[in-house]
Picture 1 (cartoon, rainbow, N blue to C red):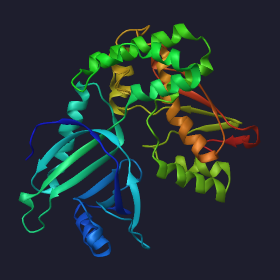
Picture 2: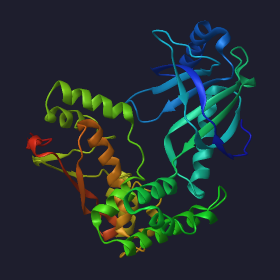
Picture 3: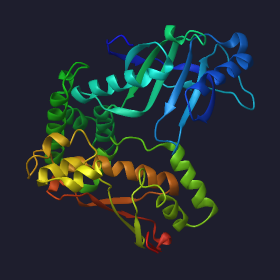
Length: 356
């Protein structure tokens, strides 16, 4: 069971000692806490917590099992870091940890109707952790938010200057934790429209809006970078071809990658009767969905540079060099799919495809 009250919080930074590892089931997490208690001892100054890195691994969970500590604790297994400040939606879960997912889904349902979108991180703070009577457990579930508008302001200031950023952010003060998703998407629509009037430089617009993208899982970037450093560029692509869920199937011709985004709902996309149904089944972005019923869309295609930022961070993280991304097709232009080209450094020219 859970207390159905969902609360917006600005979480403060806290020093933690942690073990970062993959687990297959939640039952393994309590064993990690036992090991941490032995190593950290009197340095522990708060409740046990777990940080979930969603999307980092193909199977199971990548987590950090942790305790707040009064002083650094480091060993071969345990390390200390500052857990960053973050905005979050929180909710109490009362009862067995095996049913926490029910509470997590309630927060996600709330996200669907309010002015927020989630990051790939979730925290669980175990206020009461009773191994013999799990029905008495109390955990605070914290879904970490992705602050699209804040990143938009930062990108605009960096690229276009502080005064222009202020003009673009007009009206954001009316958006609160209680605002609806409709109010937020309308604000985003008007902000992107203002950006289009303030510059016709597509590269600058890309730099501003791509800054808003969700952060690609760092663990995946590091895994692919190691593959690249130990082998060839094509080894990255071959690794991507083995994972249809997280990666598309880029085709390399010369120094350009050609790729098509995978549909968010492949079955719905295949069975769609109308173009609008097809577009909605295809699109991954909740901010775009309200604008897909009619074409030309009321939301400018400039917004889709946000999606380009997802790939920009991935490829620049792998290569350690800048790449240039260009949209070929997008749903907001009336296409029924999204395709991109990614220009690589010239020295990486070559040929590779899934069929090859």
